[in-house]
Image 1 (tube, protein in one colour):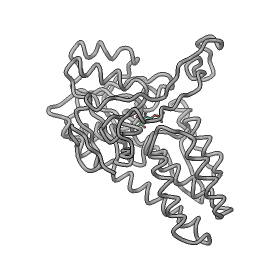
Image 2 (cartoon, rainbow, N blue to C red):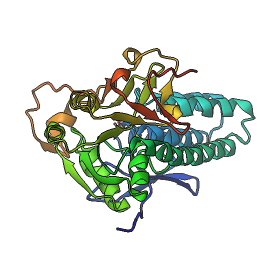
Image 3 (tube, rainbow, N blue to C red):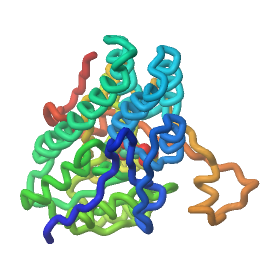
Image 4 (spheres, rainbow, N blue to C red):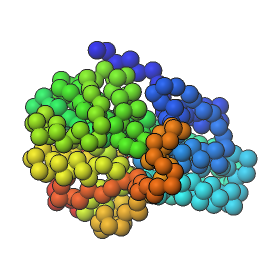
Amino acid sequence: MPAREDYFAVMFENDKLVYLDQTKLPTEEEYVETDDVERIAEAIERLEVRGAPQLGVVGAYGFALGLKRDPSNAAAERAYRRLVETRPTAVNLKWALDRAMEEYRRGSEDDAYDRLVAFAAALHRDDAEKCRRIGENGLAMFKKRSTALTHCNTGKLATGGDGTAFSVLKTAHERGMLKYVYADETRPLLQGSRLTAYELDKSGVPFSILADNAAATLFQRGEIDLVVVGADRIAANGDAANKIGTYNLAVLCAYHDVPFYIAAPTSTIDASIASGEEIPIERRDGEEVRTFRGTRVADKRHDAYNPAFDVTPAELIAGIATERALHEPPYRFER
Ligand code: MRU
């Protein structure tokens, strides 16, 4: 099937950030336009925009827009602090904001807004190129024409380009190495069945969605050749945080002798932390578990455990595809 992509996740146009509101997908394709840094911070918190590398891109545009009317040092500090606190696990956000702040401090206030918009656009383009290279480097995961399973959403919606794990799948599809994809629905917010399915369909990749708890039976039946997922933060030793439910898959892979891979740009590597124990895990509102799109599916009085991410130990990871290489264990990422 030919590719028929006709959507974008994030764009900067007429001095505004334009983004596809991912909470409405797949039933509505609604683009939001704003130049308000507070609105951008809320969009990040609500997961209207999401995915680790995309958070870096949006953070950088948001920081620039925070200087549009007031380029003072106080405004820069305010924008930085508001944005960096929105989502604590995805290190790409802090990575991009730290660089944006350095760029701000390099020159004068007079042209700060223009410089920071140019900086964000360059970061956006750079992430797109990294995605392309991750796709190429990830091809080595395919020893034969394979069926892959993935979790959460790692495509154009989650990055500045074609994706991380998604770029690996798309590249393998284009090169005839991908037989089929199984996409976990990814409870509680269904990034898999709402977003990855939307993107696989647009890219012409054959796939099924499945409830997260159906994955084990696919492994038992010998249907899965490899698992590839993204990451929100990777420690120096290769331990990797990703969407809750990822660790389950890594354990399944180990039991069934199936390779488990991560794909992420080097901006997701946090070499300042030795291991996954130091990765802060975002805890989200229990209402995400007790409701679905405004419909109550569990009693409001019941406590809900809702960590957004889990950490997969490096010993369960067969390889990490970055824009540089397909890294193999033992992992030793340096600052
Ligand atoms: O909470 P989300 O939807 O932002 O979580 C996203 C993920 O966990 C992705 O797998 C990760 O950011 C890698 S995206 C290329």
